[in-house]
Amino acid sequence: MKLLLFMGLWWLGAVTGDEQPRNGQGRVVIYRQREFGGNSYDLKINDKKLGSLPTNRYLEIEVPPGRVKLESVKDYFSENRTLWLSVQAGHTYYVKAVEEVDFLSRSLLMAPIAEEQAQRELNRLKPARPSSH
Image (cartoon, rainbow, N blue to C red; front, side, top):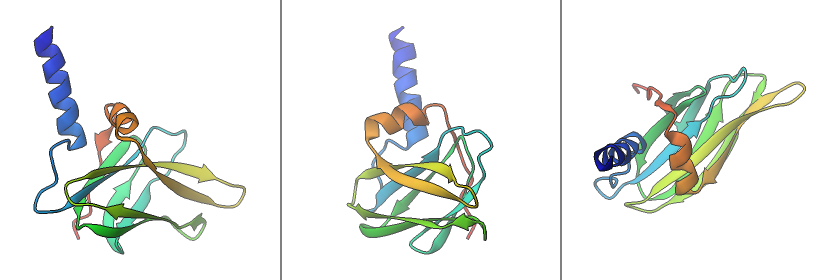
């Protein structure tokens, strides 16, 4: 039983990148839970494409310390949203994203989330593919 508990905790750490960020970097984990009819959104971090974030997935990136700009981008009918984070070296920041659908537009709302809540929710998600750029 203890072995199963240990393996579960190890797996959670592996999934959420629980190890410390390297080389004086900070880490940002952006995730989306399953949403009915949710669309995939492109994410930019400091104006560089990070990758596409569909529902039930997460993206993880190491960033330099300081002010970090996180932006969601979709298409003409979507409103781009921006979230600014103050990142410290050696720290991990969790951001939850939820699609908001309005009468004529949609957008991806993003908000910082406490580590405990994020780790519970990340447990059921799969990694998304980061951009190759």
